[in-house]
Image (cartoon, rainbow, N blue to C red; front, side, top):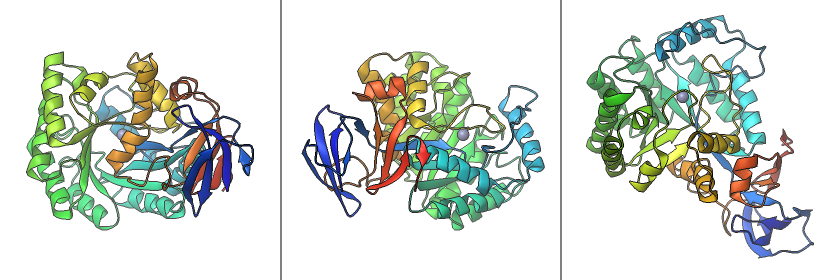
Length: 389
Ligand SMILES: [Zn+2]
């Protein structure tokens, strides 16, 4: 199978020869392929570093947001009511979301899955079904996420441990101070399981200011003590955008030393971590959708090209290299954090790619063009935004 006339990120045109699901050769451009891409841009698959497949209400009738206040705790309570009233299983809505993100070119993702005293492991079981259903098409990494806290939700630590035994890949966490009111108690529970099970950690941290920074430094210290360097991430880390530059820079050095990555989805209503400063200090940065049409947010569509644009917009990025930076957060850098090593458009690499009408990466981020083709292992997975596999 030959995809002719593909424009690669460096601007050069090639034919992509595919054999056995992999890129066998990058040949001089011709008009002799099985499919002529006519100079369209070929991107590596998009990677969603933070999504919630179990929370989405995608495919269900519109449900107005029911949170009675603007705090994280208000949204947790509102979601518990929505969950209790749900009749459609999370595996069904989760599959709707996976189909939608595949159509937009995402082939790898990390999904947090709620685990607490209300749900037990139900949502994990539902999302394990989704992972099974799509196992040949997309990578789904699962984080066992204590959405109601660990200490204030009785039995959650044991459930998290059981979740790892049943197939979750990482331990999650949530605002040790803001939700559980006990920094050490929360981190003791999470890191003890992670260390014993030999898995990574990805903690939601919304807490702001010095309290947030203290938690980031504590997570860095725990990461080193547990020997989990390069296996730990903090999602959101709004605190980094809420303190003076000097404090953010010192904290960035601690994160880089400890090998702790930062995920941002380009929040609308919270401080954005200083992305350039973090990168200059050697911190790994990656992007994710976070909530897609759920009890937390009415927004989101799981499109990581649009997410790269949202992050760039929020950061006030305008130059091509800045847009390429957020594109990297939605592709290569996220793949690195997720440990996806078989990745990228190169001879010998997987024949996984996304085709769009654009001349450069920057244009693709700015314009978020329709995905003409999504190709997985040389096979057409989606065309013009519709899954065909
Ligand atoms: Zn989240």
